[in-house]
Length: 293
Image (cartoon, rainbow, N blue to C red; front, top):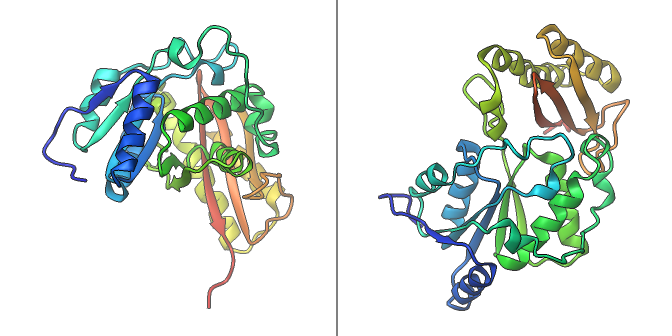
């Protein structure tokens, strides 16, 4: 696949048409990559599309703001919907098919099936957003059935989501292979997110303490500190000093089970969720402490 010159991506609205196109392409010997999104695309999303474009013959990008993964009093109604600019951003890659269904196509009247998420969904996000992952697993499994791609690409920024979806794919014999791609950050370290546009200049400055807290924690681990509880307290202090008071979690966890650690092991994932003003942000990093020869 090429990423120049710009060509307008093909938009598909019908799930039946989308599935038929993917199956036809695969029968022709073409490899299909899939990037599920909720739109409001940024360079983080584009890194996934670029990976799909490089590794596959056709990239499919879904744009659907999924109502069932938003809890009460969350930002579903104001979540940015920018289809025209999203399509323009995707025009640098081709061939790209953009799947943008209506809510009634994905949740028709009478639909009552919900995919129960695996146990890795229970801590962290599961504690603070208890209905979130059932919405994620249900919509992603539906998307995998509509877009039965060879490979699906997700970002590491949603680390727990990636764990949940990988386990779901194993448990339910999903043929699509899941690839998790690195976090893309702004030059100052802030993890790219569609929600960053909500931040005022002052809030954005405060938000930098999230990635800074991850960096400080990583440095302590690399210096030999294994007291996970103390390191977590240090992360909270770093964010508190920047004016962030609402911290849902700042933990060192087992990278497979997401169980919070009191003592760091050879490989840990450090995860943060905090509210900056009215905007809830998440970030993480994986630290491997295994010595190399």
